[in-house]
Image (cartoon, rainbow, N blue to C red; front, top):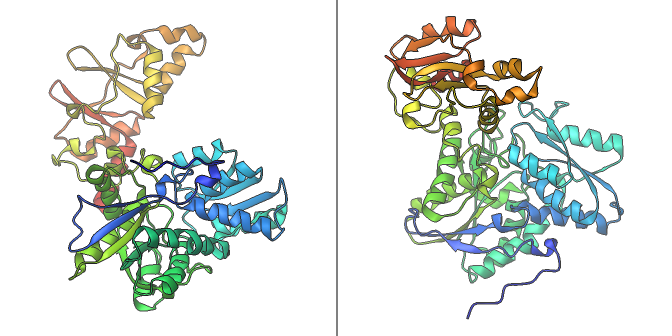
Amino acid sequence: MTAKAPVFGGVLEAIGNTPLMEVTHLDTGPCRLFLKLESQNPGGSIKDRIGKSMIEAAEQDGSLKPGGKLIEATAGNTGLGLALVAAQKGYHLTLIVPDKMAQEKIFHLKALGTEVILTRSDVGKGHPEYYQDMAERIAAETGAIFVNQFDNPANPYAHETTTGPEILEQMDGDLDAMVCGVGSGGTITGLGRYFAKASPKTEMVLADPEGSILAEYVNTGHLSEDVGSWVVEGIGEDFIPPVSDLSLAKSAYTISDKEALMTARELLTKEGVLGGSSSGTLIAAALRYCREQTEPKRVVTFVCDSGNKYLSKMFNDFWMVDQGFIQREQHNDLRDLIARLHEKHATVLVSPEDTLLVAYGRMKLYDVSQLPVLDADSKAVGIIDESDILLAVTENEDHFKKKVGEAMTSKLETVPSDAPMEALLPIFNKDMVAIVVDGDTFLGLITRIDLLNYLRRRMK
């Protein structure tokens, strides 16, 4: 007989007590690796725990009054956790977020009623547009409470009092290693404090994105000023967060963006778990740790959040190719510059008989500004862009019913696939896109951004 599922009195009661599952299809060497599915929290991530803890701490110390205002700097999931709790408790929340944050997260935040202010992700601490400095400044100017996850003791306290005890109980008291990332430092600090008392044999291991300074500090004690950039969201830092105690970590692994994202994709295909980018970093580090061991160990790491907020990025093959994380089959000609090859059935197109409304709908759906027009024999007979549609419908909206063939540009700039890359420049100088052909066969489009993406990938 299965255990009765709990009935909660509200969504906040559903935070925590997440399931633990064993990895069974990835190579874990001599070890057993378990994943704490924090993606099952109602806000979708481990940060629900600290969102609840930090707001409740502000309530308890009297600084947060009914209807009060909160402000926080966040690269992602902490904002969602705070937004969930603030919405339930009736507080106004403003979040300052770096501009690399996934659009899906921003949509989620705004749907919860949160005010979102984007700022630059390419500046460091001390710059007026650095997200933490901006949040602190706006809080001082408006009288809002600056939550400050990076220096808030309620952050590690949440993990010391809930996450740690849950894990140790689920592992029947037998845990050799715990692999964590550091964003604010609350997870590794809270768990490290708990396990130091309740399970001293448990080794704390840091998983850190390449470009962050934290792994080098843990492994060598050297605090580097050579800060890079990384795609993975929510972990890695260019400073040591005040709330963190990195002395609790025994070792650290540096994980590249490519390894992290490919590991997260493999987690889905082999284990059936849809995790986010930081989950890929943690699991990649945990797998490295497990494979290095010479005797069996029991290891736990997190699926920090759900991958459903990264579907347009790391689970999108086109995005992965553009970023250089997936290597497509190379032809050593202009086909290598085409983002959506027609022979792979990837081209978004219309026929001359489609209506302008259909063309407009496809542009919106696939976020493109022009479409090739192919006839029944798959021959390129035109191209239609936003300007063509706008010109046709400005005076009469009913013209959306017109055929594409009536509004398209028939004068095409075609280039054979074996032409040199330099042949594209005169076409782009005329504000046109290049239609790549092999004889009469349409192969695909090349735009300015396709050329830029190709050149950037070659730089790597």
